[in-house]
Length: 193
Image 1 (tube, one colour):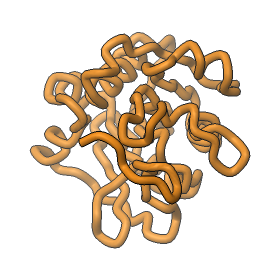
Image 2: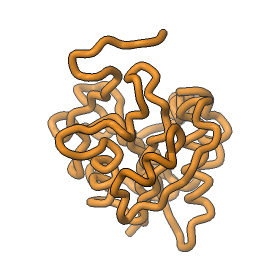
Image 3: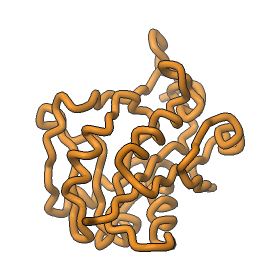
Image 4: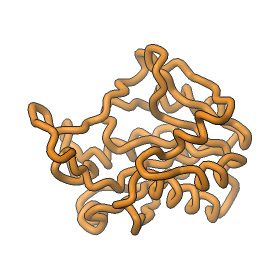
């Protein structure tokens, strides 16, 4: 059986939201706490990448069972967080066959959706959840892809370029999770460009 690590990307400043999404309270807990709990239900180990107000998040959030990584380049976009997480997994004691990448701002993510995608884990696997035929998260990156994913990730695109250029297993997660991300506060208006 393949070892699947959870990789929660939670470093962004939440410019449009008005604050780092890791510190946003949703349904009685912080978004980062929800994301870590969901990942821990399926994955071991779980790494969470922090950036904006990382010390505040680390001191405020209950991240029990997760290893915290700091992305000092978080302002450059999601790609730097993905690289930080993959670098952390490359140096992980013990073998990790695949990384299951999730985002902090998806409170509707469920263990069921993570399990469906994680079921495809292998060192050479690349898989992505789809919802009504549209690609979303989580994204499964087998160990064999990590170096190229890290090399091609830029700005806020993360693994998008890599996924577009390679064969990807699409896993239908329609009805298993809500793929909507929180870009602006409920009833709020986007701020910034």
